[in-house]
Image 1 (cartoon, rainbow, N blue to C red):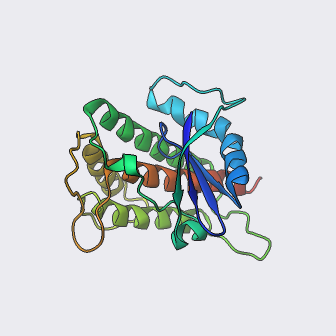
Image 2: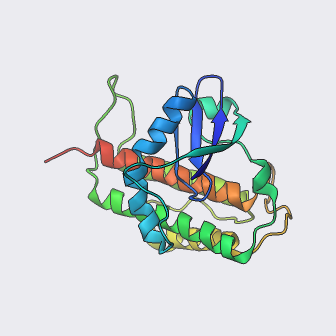
Length: 220
């Protein structure tokens, strides 16, 4: 599988180009690739939700680094942040559909993780970290901001407002499903995101918190 490396000064992200959202970080290239490989079984469940052919071995994933880019302060903070040269190439209809279903699969994973999670989550060694509902509110807030980068304007849905959550997700997926020729998509102030980067960033953020929720759920 072709992967890219986004190198900050303190943290590196490794991401699988064909599967938006499958990206993990580490203290350097090797650590990032090891973290990516360790998440293969988890991502396999997400990939199967898409209905797309699953073309990777989750037991022994085979990664080939094909792109390396310089990261930013946001990379070091803990989020993917770099638009790749290949992200700005036109997106045909078949790839656009793939972007959309990968993001939708990430949302489904988050919803299932939230349903299974305890309201209070295990905290870090110093008591840090969000509980389930604040974490979900954080994801909703981020997505309302991300959506504007591709031309979708929604207020942040209230937690539990299924109609509003479904509406913003539907509009995001509709944009991602459209073939794209390079035109700016964003509205308001700030930069516009190309669809490939938008799908990668949205799906990664959703899965990062879905998996965190699963890891930190308290037992009975």
